[in-house]
Image (cartoon, rainbow, N blue to C red):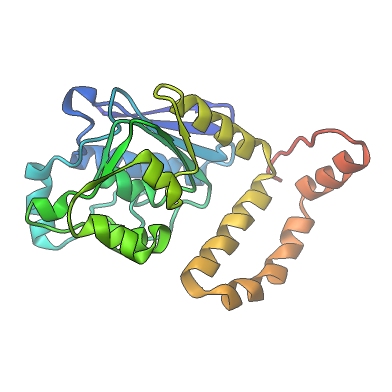
Length: 259
């Protein structure tokens, strides 16, 4: 039985972590299924946005360490399956489409690290984030050492990476890790509404925004600036660009097809 469930809601692929009896602890099998879900999101044209969420009181209390320890000890990294996309973006390309994430309760270790590879995050105000690895004799290997300092600020990140201490949803919002904090039980509804607004926008434009933003983040502003007008003609030649202009002239909402 898979503990990662996917459902299609319009143009949104909802990816649910469903192992609440184990506080959604991540097993190797769950990692495999998460990777396959992201691969599906990337490949299927009708899927425009991903929405990651979890069943139960907590997003996750962490990984199933007894199963992961032998894998980590080999130094092989995460075993991303064929057709999958590494949720931690340590190997291979990232998903080309935006991903929104909703969290609550404990959002520990891998929960933080997968969150760092999503594009918009919504947290219930009872969420507690933590990178606990230094309390377990190891260190984070899902990308937190790469991305938490960049997204949260160097000293803010080291405050938590080097101690294993938890931080609150309010602190996550203050430092830019989450974009909205809501009452418990409202996080998925809010995240879904954001995902649906993204899905209603022009898919080619949305994906171009992600490519440009990521290029600037990874290689600097000059590299991204050099590509803007190289990539623009293909977008402007699309049917969606024509629809955007026509809807503007007709003073109506555009209906985009991704073509």
